[in-house]
Length: 121
Image (cartoon, rainbow, N blue to C red):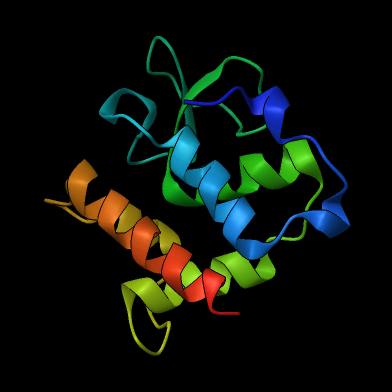
């Protein structure tokens, strides 16, 4: 996983694919992903995605963490994620992330699919 400080660049220069690449980095292992909260500290308690103690993130928490750190616009990246989840983008990110039985592998496949959409923009 790359360091979050490696992402800092001009917000206008971050493409949706780069934003999604950062999301993929954050959620790179099962230990860094969580359900039931946008972010959690090492001890499992819920924290804000902006909290320096945050160590685990939901899909939407990771997306907002990228925006918080880089100040990059995330709307197009979010749209790509929504399309990757459902063709008409009708499933909210928190509902997808918190779905019972969702595996980390399925989450990663969704992010990869969203990356393909973003690269085609």
